[in-house]
Length: 120
Image (tube, rainbow, N blue to C red; front, side, top):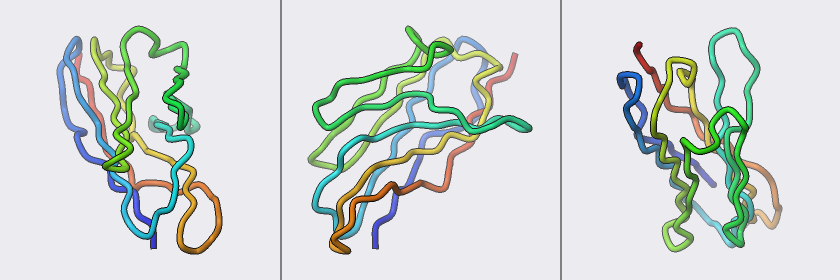
């Protein structure tokens, strides 16, 4: 059984910072790409950032320069450092990872989401 658990969300004023964490646990053999998505009320879920197993990264244009994704492979954890937050960053943030587990399958897993609210 593989689980992804996010933490670090909360309420912050515009211009502030938050650091999200997502830890994967269970019978994990390997993790490839790890991603952060977000979904604002009434909007579709969108990809925020992705980090591959070689630590190469990509970001949505809306967050470039303000957000940094990183990972700690020893801890099976991905992070999202968000700076200069804007009210439009308000959303539920979800982590996603491509995991090869003891089930001998390689598939994406999702966390339960963590709320980020940015006040103006």
